[in-house]
Image 1 (cartoon, rainbow, N blue to C red):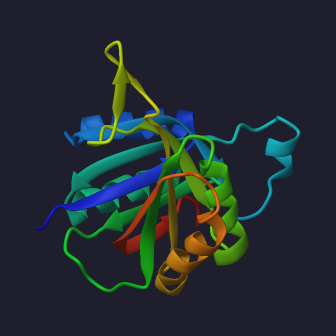
Image 2 (cartoon, rainbow, N blue to C red):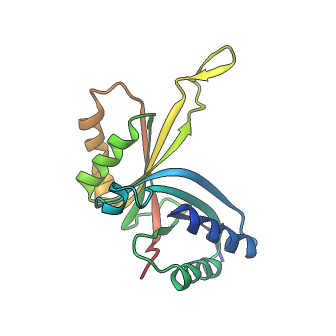
Length: 194
């Protein structure tokens, strides 16, 4: 069986529980903590401060059998609305109904891109802090400057992902910001509740 890349976006407490299940099944994984969630619809609990919008992203590779075990565990023991999403990303370039849109922008521009995704594509988005390490990164006294970035990720229909290029050009061309975008095919998409 082929191994496929899996990604889960959820809150910190569920991310810790999923991490333990992955360890139990000897699945190596990466956790990106302290990301900001931008759901499709505004959440009243987040607005009044009862529920934090902070998310964790878990990335791991496993076969179909282990994928089903992890998803079954989540749906059996943590079946709550707005718990997060889980999807598989193909390593080959293939046409699928849903794409993972990834945008890398200068720090401070992630919320603008997430809002554009929510407004124009009717999709949620997650923002992660990142640091650029490209050839154009400048250093001063051994410290990198102007390298703070934000990575915005969103699972959206392919038709919406295809129109993002024009939307970004129209909305970001007057801003002094670097922006890099790409999409990856998603083979399976699950909300972490039934």
